[in-house]
Length: 318
Image 1 (cartoon, helix red, strand yellow):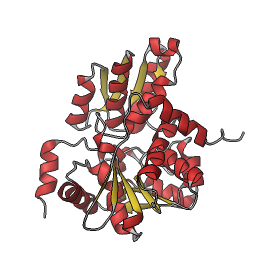
Image 2 (cartoon, rainbow, N blue to C red):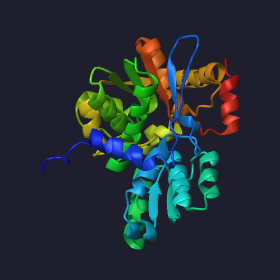
Image 3 (cartoon, rainbow, N blue to C red):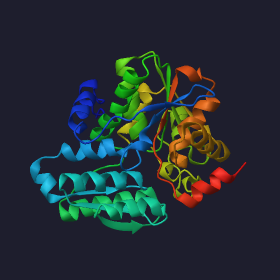
Image 4 (cartoon, rainbow, N blue to C red):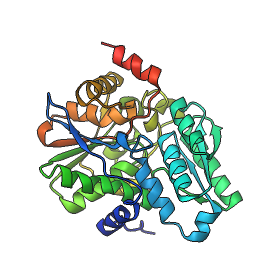
């Protein structure tokens, strides 16, 4: 049995029209010393790119499904986005998160009034719990990455990059479950095939890099991915729906060290005056190490939800 067709450019443009009343475009901000440009997805109201997918997925539901409510599982940013979008649209939401998620992300979900359930650190555990709740309560499952509506929405980032940086030659984006990278890469390659797309992930959670080189999905254990300080990138494997898009449209996936991630957090704060969580800084760390023409590169700063004390500690390191 063949895989379903890949998402289309028409679907990405449709997602852009659908979310436009609720999700504003984010700016591109340059690092003056090296010329690298950052797509500041951290400036969304919930502090991360996930707001695009949350709105698109919920708005794509019919009235009956919206009335029944939604459930989602997440390491943090997707949960905040679904909670925010659901509250804005008048939809009941239940979120499943790991108990070790940063307090700033847990608090963000609670502020939106959603029901919150905390489980263990394994991404497979929270996915299973959310699937069970969906079946038991008749809720619509809003996946964090492994869903066409999510990838179509992340593709809108690519459309904005072309409008804001028409000379771009290489785009860097973080990769965890693959929803951001898969959707963004589809938008880039279906619009301008000559533009390179590079995924970046931590060395300590390098399942996507290994999968890319092996030509098949390779899973890491929860213990392995929990080693990285980039808590938003601790998903144990690529999604079965995101993987075909990565295989078709991504040029390379590289890894970066924990020290490189922290250095990128400091650089972003110093030069762009932006707060980046470690997960959000990964693409910038990758761009700096990759060797591309930085003046014609854009790196996605995917999120800025970081515990203030942790952020301060990173800034204080030399």
